[in-house]
Length: 435
Image 1 (tube, helix red, strand yellow):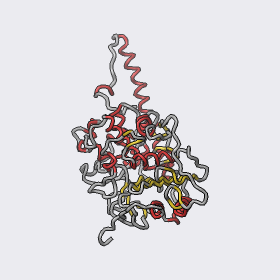
Image 2 (cartoon, helix red, strand yellow):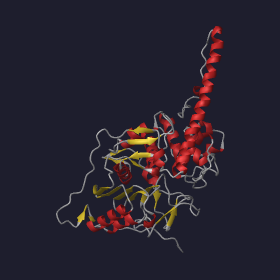
Image 3 (cartoon, one colour):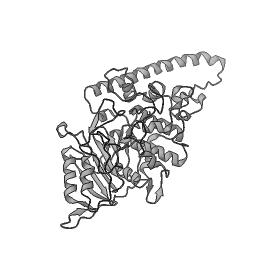
């Protein structure tokens, strides 16, 4: 398989040895089976792609097709997160009233959550797992992988592998030099302004969405064939393919496997256990935009890293400006930063595509009580809300909530913010004029 690492142009070509003339014919004959093998490999990859697509169209949960998986290392001996002590007849835990914690946990349970965690005042205020899930169970993260990929880019910046968020991606994907894609910057892969085709759904086997997501050769596909539809930087267009290119950039920038870099440079420093990530084929490209499996607490630890401005136990692991960049939206979407969603102006149903375009959306029953709130938000309502003013994190992971519940994305954080014993001064999410 062609390597996706950044190598000199000649290194992907076959190096010819100087052979005696008597062996020339043998060399030619040996090449024929190799070509036949390449054709067979292409046919096999196409068969795998068709099987994956068929399963997905038949209603299989996406995580059931996450094969093969590559191990993601983590901290060798993860330290336990500090937990709040509960006194007898206490009315609050870690500065949150027990009635608010109880109501939030009940809503998580009603949503069929697998995990519900609350962090406040530097301690776990609540931790609940459901239906056989434990603190050690690796859970599908869906698009929570996107903020994780953004943090990995920040780590690469800190370590000097990447010069700037405004560095051209073509420095790492030289195949794009001299094309319209040469204008794509590293930040565009994180804030979804790459200009590449936005996400969609199709049953067509030739659809770029399906090829980019399901093909064993998806690394080559997203580099060579995924369409550019807009000028880079001009439009918000959310897609897994855009986020999957982060793995290409990081592997070529660092010379390391994405899973290994993620584990040793992000998860281990924050004290997180490891897990696994879907790769397109053995030794293939990781799906950095969608498909990491980690225990629930890993996402809480990642949110803590942002809450603490990129510092862990007094040690800075992200550039001093980076978290601020992550939570700053763009003109093209006032509700999205670098891999994370931000409160922005209130809208009852916030879509995942460009503002004002049709498509999937999530309901907000009321404005967030903290206008500076940001969140990790994955398909099926995998959510990690962070209120920086309150130092509050609330996590809900698990299956998609029942339709009858009509999931409210603002309910968990607002229940807990209203339940703070000593609440900070909070400014609510602004409501646009006429909204």
